[in-house]
Length: 190
Image (cartoon, rainbow, N blue to C red; front, side, top):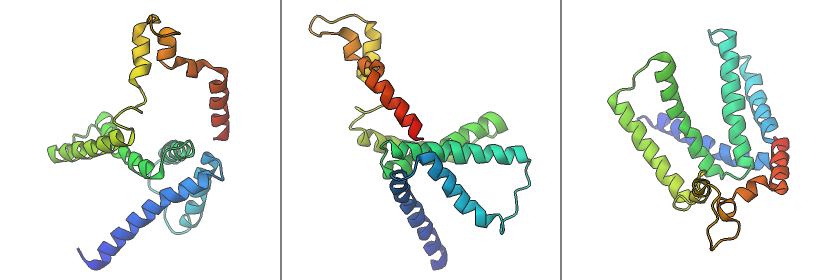
């Protein structure tokens, strides 16, 4: 690879990496969805003078803009605001490749080749290893053993534990007024 191309590739990686740190700093000062909108306005305003509009239907262009701009990056900024580390966010956003493969298969009838599937599986395995390590050996997974375990108990109360499955499952945290108030405040910050 020519040195010029190598330097360009490295500069893209640096800009992409620093981007997530800037997002982290930004969401500390500005609501996540507003920051997302500002990011696109600042990027799009000069671009409209130099880049031609893609030759696709306006509905597809608007749909793509909403899906990526509001959906993907809006949720990314919100996740960072609510505590996801910037480094982990930069990794998680790459999961879009797997969604793209799935959507291409489902809606366009494309079939990935064997080498593409192997590459995707290796990438996914790497993401899984980092996620499990980051979550402390799996203890922080979204569906934790104490939550689903309590649900499986069906409300039975073990003799050694006051509150039974309700307490064990951590459900009290979900129904307490403080939790509901915190959740509403978090949504209002978006």
